[in-house]
Image (cartoon, rainbow, N blue to C red):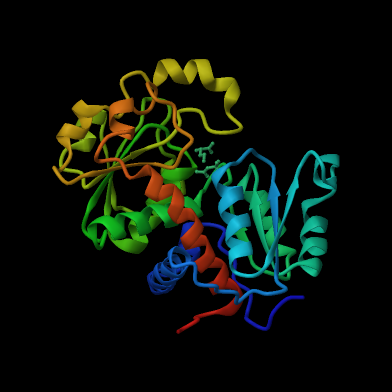
Amino acid sequence: MPGTHPIKHFLQFSDFSLDEFEHVFQRAAVIKRKFKAYEVYHPLVDRTLVMVFEKSSTRTRLSFEAGMHQLGGAAIYLNTRDSQLGRGEPVEDAGQVMSRMCDIIMVRTFGQDIIERFAANSRVPVINGLTNEHHPCQVLADIFTYVEHRGAIAGKTVAWIGDANNMLYSWLQAAEVFGFHLNIATPPGYDIEHDRVETGRFTIFSNPSDACAGAHLVTTDVWTSMGYEKENAARLEAFDGYIVDSAKMARAAPEALFMHCLPAHRGEEVSADVIDGPQSVVWDEAENRLHVQKALIEYLLLGRVTE
Ligand code: CP
Ligand code: NVA
């Protein structure tokens, strides 16, 4: 039941222009206000979201599923174990079939190539709910959260401490779109791959504390992402000293915020006093996944709603 709106996917952060993000943020603020006021907003009656999970999730599943219900639609959860995807059905065939039965699809998987092949065979919009390479919905929520707390992010400095993972590559794409700077500190052997980066808006630091100096936002993530569990012991050793603790936060700007996409490991990538402290906005950040993704779904299915 594809709609009449031209198909657009959100497979990585750079798929949207600044103008599109500004629209989505403006709608996210409206949709959030309605939610807080218990105002019924059902623009997606009879529309169905299919969510395909090849990796675990708490926030992504909950925010997409609850969000779709709150917009008046339905959400269906599929995972690798219980669907034919886990028994080798080609992703191209899955894209064809799912997109004939539903209106929009979210996929959480391993390689970015998998979601690209899925989208190439889909008649309906496909949203990246995390791949090894990107996590655009999370950075969408993070920037919305920054703007809510501190205003425009353009011209600001964001410190990324830790692994050069999916989150960092989405932050790098966001830096180019929104015009902010990234201070990056990753341990030796876990640095960014420069041929995957299409912006010059970053500086690499060998000392994670120096990367935090003057930053307006300090952010980190797990040292071992999903799919890399076998490397956990080596990573624990390599990332020693990369914890975001109060000493590093003290180097940041006085009004600096702390973010983490969660789930977090207190005592590894972040100390308990930082993640549970006054500069941390991790719960707002998590909640905002709901609001920004509702606005994203609205935009992908209905275009630029104005009201
Ligand atoms: N931050 C995030 O995507 O969380 P989940 O893995 O719980 O979905
Ligand atoms: N980088 C993490 C994010 C989890 C939400 C992972 O990919 O596991």
